[in-house]
Length: 149
Image (cartoon, rainbow, N blue to C red; front, side):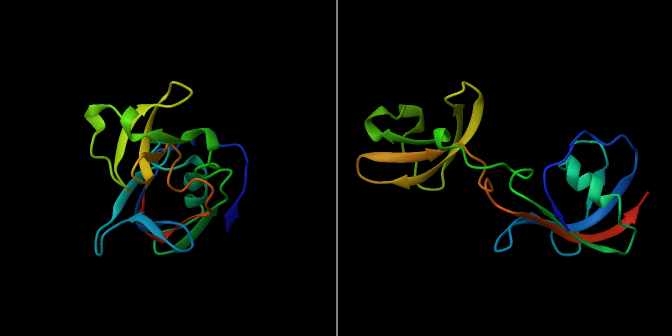
């Protein structure tokens, strides 16, 4: 089931789901439960995207699920203003030694604190990206409901 933009208000219920899951794209698993481990989700707690919670409520214990979130409701689309090329000579000494894949927190162009990661490096510059790594991607949340209470 693919989810596209709709109302995303928090769900008000006290139900708890014990699930096994993976979260990622069609080609890459971003996170998930370890083998023979489960994850507890209290609906309305904010641990999951509200649309994932809404869809999870449709499943019973023992049922498998696959929920797909369109980029517009998942992690959004990449914002070009958050992809910034910086001269290495301008990088603060507290961040010296950054390499591709390194991450750090700093204010973005909008002055909000963001997590940036280094995506490119050459002799003179680094490129940092403040977008979520899954921005612009179709998100796939799949797994099995172990119990529901």
